Amino acid sequence: MANNAAPETLEEFQAKLVEITEGLPKRLRQCADYIGQNTDRIAVSTVADLSSAAGVQPSAFMRFCQLMGFSGYSQMQKMFRDIHVQHWPDYATRLKKMRESGDETPATLLAEFVDAGRASLENLARSIDPKSLEKAVSVIADARMIHIIGFNRAFPVATYLSYAFEKMDVPAMLHAKIGNLDHRHAIREGDVLIAVTFSAYTQETLELTAFAKTQNAEIVAITDALNSPMHQLGATTLNVTEADVGAFRALSAPLSLAITLAVSVGARRDSDNQ
Amino acid sequence: MANNAAPETLEEFQAKLVEITEGLPKRLRQCADYIGQNTDRIAVSTVADLSSAAGVQPSAFMRFCQLMGFSGYSQMQKMFRDIHVQHWPDYATRLKKMRESGDETPATLLAEFVDAGRASLENLARSIDPKSLEKAVSVIADARMIHIIGFNRAFPVATYLSYAFEKMDVPAMLHAKIGNLDHRHAIREGDVLIAVTFSAYTQETLELTAFAKTQNAEIVAITDALNSPMHQLGATTLNVTEADVGAFRALSAPLSLAITLAVSVGARRDSDNQ
DNA sequence: TACCTTATGGAATAAATATTCCATACTGGG
DNA sequence: CCCAGTATGGAATATTTATTCCATAAGGTA
Image 1 (cartoon, rainbow over the protein chains, first blue to last red):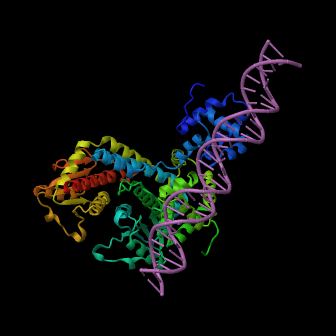
Image 2 (image 1 turned 90 degrees about the horizontal axis):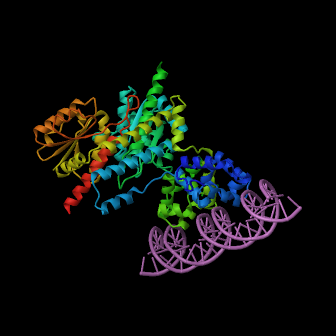
Image 3 (image 1 turned 135 degrees about the horizontal axis):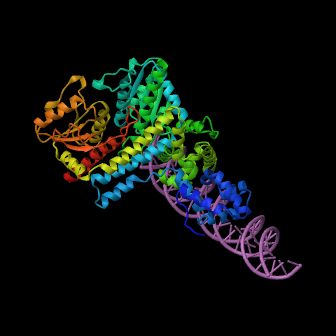
């Protein structure tokens, strides 16, 4: 065999598969064909599953893995699992190492944030559910008035939403509690509240959301976990996680999601008005 | 427990998670929180992996699975593996599909922003000059007081800087012009002003910067062009461009730069105080 | 047809992984 | 401060899953 190294990317895997498929004996050919069409199963199946689905014995499947250049099924599976699970490097540890090696320049720190941001964006694209997004957009687009809240780390996201809506002449109101003024009574039935909150969830945000609920306003939440308290409040939720570097995060993913939401709503409203 | 049946869909799983999370003892709570943020790992990880990532013992994780209504980890994992197979397409293909589908759904727009964000981050990492960054950090770290200004699109960046400094107990002041109150006279010699401005450069930002200059305060600017007016004002400038999608940008790059700046300053101050 | 080579099935073994169990450490109420 | 009642860690065990091995079958050639 010309190249006996194990593939490390999907592309290499595919190339290798094509390369060896030709001239394979019957059973091994079955393996190749099955894998060609069901590549996605590798990450979550056992050899027994795959081999019986391909109509061969486990041992035959094993030989196939080896022909592909892997040491066995486990190694091949590992590759697919790594691809699937987002590759969240452990930035906290990396940061610590960086500090210990005395290489903690601003430039290396920036590199970490950039890397974390890229990973987060990738993960956002992969994990967002188009249906929830669509739902969120229409709920917001249909509202009479848009209210926005978000404190601490979520505040920049809230202000950016506010800015974007303003630019598009969409009526929106940022509840920023300036001067301890509370405008909660502006929230009425038919309105929507966009609540942005990440762990640890700010009390004020939760409270205002609960209040909005009592007013029969719709709630759309941008949050960071499946079990965020926003779910208890009956919100249409959009989950987005940003990898953290030490104690901080760069907000790339949440902001991208927010601006998408705003622009989509703007476009929707425009076309509705015509 | 009211409902002890094992969840069978993601929605049910989420509902159950939210339901039980409240009032869980420490370790089990850790499991719930970790799973809330890393749901997608379940399909391809072992109990050992997950439990150590969540910082608990495998046995604790096991108890968590049972609380969720599953007979054990295997049953829970099976649910996620089944789901996984249904919508696999990896990130790259998914983005491509989204964009190729042509129609302007929120999901395709998100894909554009994600892509733009990634490109911007890459560009930032490549184009930033470590020396300027280093210079900016030391200028800020040495200042007696940090002033921050940024309007419109730059406002989220300014607020995030403000948040980050606050978190690290670094004295900083956001000049937000609330109630048309102007705190320009708080700017003195020995202070630094971080001015964030992107084209079209907001007048107020330019004015305050010019004023700070007359006070002999140092200026650090985060801006977007080599010919930004900030250069004329004798500022230490950091250039960062974010690719735009239509009329909007997601701010990934500027925010990453800003947080880097803040964290570096925080670290510098810490070590100076020791 | 006899012989050699390669392919295959299935059972035996090794390794990884899940699950249980129990001793010990907490925690809150009296 | 003591005593339940929980919660927790860690090691022991059961189960599943991967991997190897070998006897047998199939395929090709002289």
